Image (cartoon, rainbow, N blue to C red; front, side):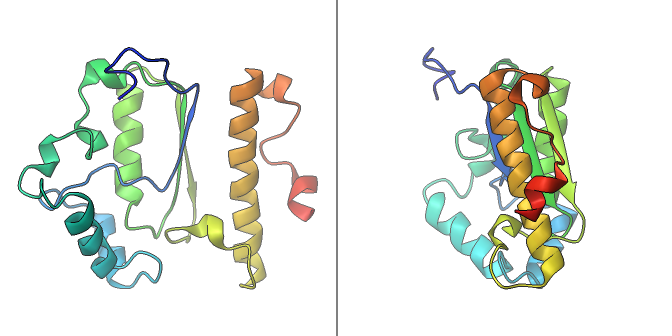
Length: 171
């Protein structure tokens, strides 16, 4: 909205498992994960569609304010540097990739990180779960911190933090 109304926009976007295609019409292969997903199952997807877009269900695929992938190119090209992360078992995975590709095609500084074998909402795994899941969540959280510092300080070198700093993972 800020880009449409000529307000100052964000300096950076960090999107964790984004729902970029809010439509019952378009379907992606990764939606099949919602049939066995604990954090974002098919019932939750249906509920979100009916709750957030109940007045627009028939034409939600055309309304870019609730369906980011439908955003016109002239608006997308003005997006700030954008960072996107998904897990490979996330029902929203293909949407994150589609949004990444569309932003890349518009010339936006965009990066995509995928965490192998992880489901939706994996940033929440820093509670008693198998050690590997917790360390991957910490790695993802560190990456978000790195991206934020990179946005604040301008470059990775000025941020004085390494993207995959193992010492920070141990703490």
